[in-house]
Image (cartoon, rainbow, N blue to C red; front, side):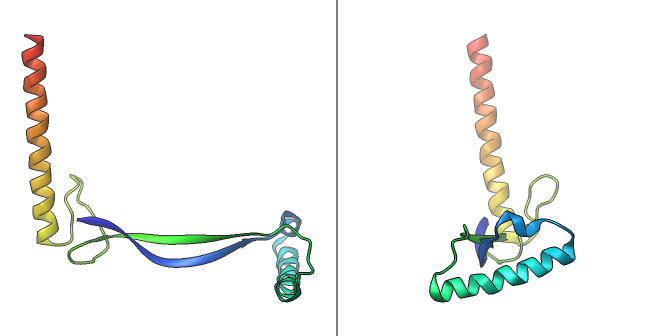
Length: 111
């Protein structure tokens, strides 16, 4: 049925906070200067600025059978393919039976 699929990776570099002060044009100039300095740092390790690098993973949810983007109707049933819909109906039926069995057990214990 639904599965989470990795679709992209990005390296995120958080610049020092002082760069983000002022209006957008000022920030643009400061970011350009900082990026130039950072590239030099990568080359020769001279900079002492605190830099935080991280990897951002971009995921999407898709059907494991037809590989379309995962969408559901209001009741939770998948929109995509018959196989996913049949699996959803079977799992819903199983959950409904478990819930009914639990309810019967509660009624029996209460009576």
